[in-house]
Length: 137
Image 1 (cartoon, rainbow, N blue to C red):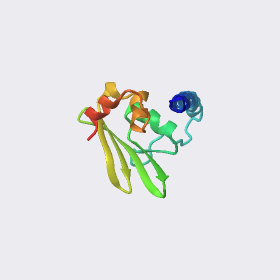
Image 2 (image 1 turned 45 degrees about the vertical axis):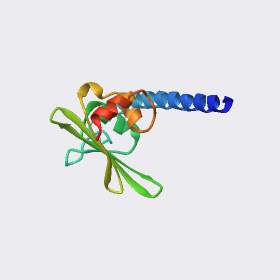
Image 3 (image 1 turned 90 degrees about the horizontal axis):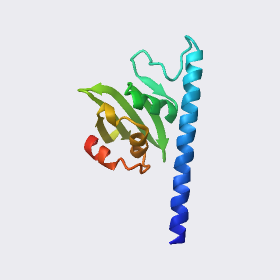
């Protein structure tokens, strides 16, 4: 029982540190992006209008504002493609695919776009399970 308490405490501490890092770096990214003038950054769309993010901070900011964007990662040598297709029929369309097979397909209303929902999408229990059950297939 004591071991379980230690594990839960460690997980909570890791989540708190991750949130602090995301908040700190996103405010730094916003100030550095605004000071770069006309330089191309990861926050600016490419020719097809999709923002190609290099990290979760970029993707998280675009999720919160429902901008067309994507993040490509690899896990266990399997490609993972996470994408926001922007506003479709008044909902923000989010998909996650492993090996080009969509495993998560969600349509969030504007009021559901927040950091807790994003964290819940990536496996962190933020008490947003009901939101995901409603928005995701």
